[in-house]
Image (tube, rainbow over all chains, first blue to last red; front, side, top):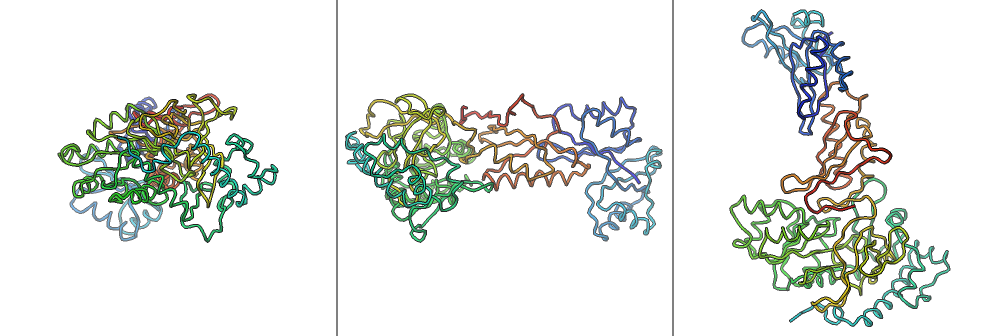
Length: 143
Length: 440
């Protein structure tokens, strides 16, 4: 299973800085991140990090509302249509993708896609049946 | 040359007016005795309407409060057979019982006349074109002014609230000369004039603006008059429990609101001791309806604070003048013309488990509009990192607050523990509005 760290942040100066500061102090490495922003003056920051549980503890200690959120991580090959194939599989199964974000790996030839989807276990089965490999926590963080 | 809608009544000698009031009060008490609530109250106090010799004798009866009205919802105050009633108006609110007021044909007729008299008092005439820029429906400002303006004989445009461009188009197409709108809307309307490259002075025939349902200061009036010059702004006062608009109104002198004493017996009392205050001193307004059949209300505590202005008014009307409302004796606030109690907001939040119990109501002028901003702490136990769930919670709060108080709030979720915590009683309302502000 793979997890992202989700943090509730108010949309005001200095909040994001406080998140990155807390993680830096705890020696956490951020691989990728995305921010969902609401018109209501707040947002949820999603972080892909090397030590999710430690990151959650560090952020909670800094006073943030934090949760570990289960995700699906797919390794993408760098060829046209790769993303389309993954998204189509989930759409055909009627699974709603809430958010997705990617990062290019250090080797520069491949990328990972983080998919925030409902019914994670089900999504993983569908992808596995179609031969799409999903990554587990340690595999992702070892990248 | 002063002119009046009903000269005999409006300029009656004080003694004549008092005699009229006493007669109307006796009639009202006899009528009230027909209602379950006052019938029972009179029996318990061994009181009969014939015992009333002077207006002061009314003080032998207790006050009626909003809680009394709510507690005997819906028909406890009804003094005529239900079949005789033809309309009801009620206050906002789905939490607990709303305040509902019933009218029979006589009541609506009397109310329309009072609104016509009020409009005439502020300078409206039968040949005017009147555009009513406010919500119709349960809010009394819509139908109240509609019937009053028709009684006056003006051409009425029931424009309703909002859609400023269409409002301006209507004003231009039909040559509107008189409008009614809540004070906090007027700057927005003026802004749209500018957006369209228009100005009220050269592009409309507007000359009278009736504005009320929210307290506003004299400075705000002058600011509004500068925006809409040469039109004049007149202060309107009323409350649903006493019909709605047409309780007290400003005349051409713009110096206090004449309260129609043939229709409302007005007391001003110290909100703590509940004893009458001397004329000129600040206190809580208390009204007794004097011309209502379906639902007479005796000694109703409005919670509005004001004072009687002393001395005669140059307009020649003898009905006493009330100063602007300067505050409340409870924690109610008024925004976008709606009365809101912090408790209503709290009750909505208590129904929503994902919202923590800490909240702050911020009233703020954004651009030219006053907004109700509700800051709610997100509940730690419900946060699982899911953005859309939180967004749904926020939207649900917006929807349920709107259903409750009829104002669409701006809801901001904030981090747990981030709202200020006061010692003892938490500060729930932070009023930062530029104008229309209620001073507590």
